[in-house]
Image 1 (cartoon, helix red, strand yellow):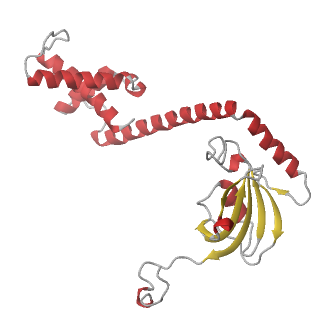
Image 2 (cartoon, helix red, strand yellow):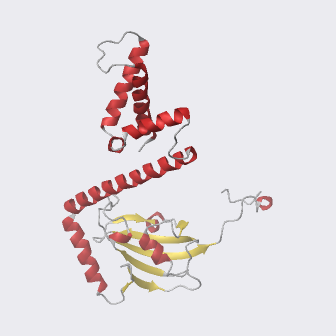
Image 3 (spheres, one colour):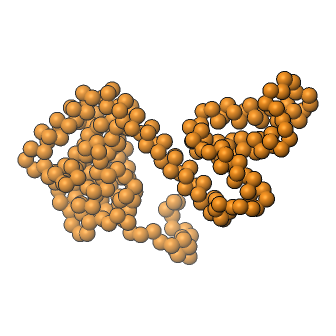
Amino acid sequence: MKLNKFLAVTIVGVSMVACKNEGVSNTQKSLENEKDSVSYALGLNTGFQMSNDPNAKELSTSLYVQGFLNGADSTNLLINPKDAGNILRSYFQKKQIEQRKIQEEAAKKKAEEEYADYKKENEKFLVDNKAKSGVITTASGLQYTVIKEGAGETPKPTDKVKVHYHGTVIDGSVFDSSVERKLPAEFGVTQVIKGWIEGLQIMKPGAKYKFFIPQELAYGHQGRLPKIKPFSTLVFDVELLEILPPAAPAGANQQHSKGDGHGH
């Protein structure tokens, strides 16, 4: 729940207590002054917000008012006030996760309906490709062929690498290519999609592999439109140029940085 929604819940409770204490009727027919207008506008605005907030609707109004009154006079407390913040954060974080899961499932269902034929086409491609000579399939479903082996150590999850790559979907359409840009890419091993993370860690510097990455290890039902549709298998030609050395601590090479001519 967003902060403004939580404040809305708070305002409702305060308003209820104020009404109880002041004896204000909910059938007042006119607004006599600015205070009346502000009071009514605040309640009206809160009501509209609350009407669209399922999280607020499921809360107990009576317990909210009880908590407000107990907090106001610091008596009959049912929980330690120091724990209140953690209880609220935990609850609303859980609600956010639940809401994201519902939205994700709805988006996946919609994509499966819209791209059903395309999904089958990609699944068939992987089945056929798996049977080809030289294609290796890992436990996760990643498929690859070795074009050229490298030498040395394989990258670790904590490493940063320098690579050249050429990426297409199964019909050969290019969606990204450092080769075409003529500029190698540098990134952390774990800063890419799952298929790359796994594939990089079986390569050695100087190696050239071809990855066939199923959608589960790529962008899944979300895709990356317009070039990568949902459920796309991604095909990459990858050359691991080098495992980059760890970055020097800030200021470690400061005394040598002047006049190096690199302009970085």
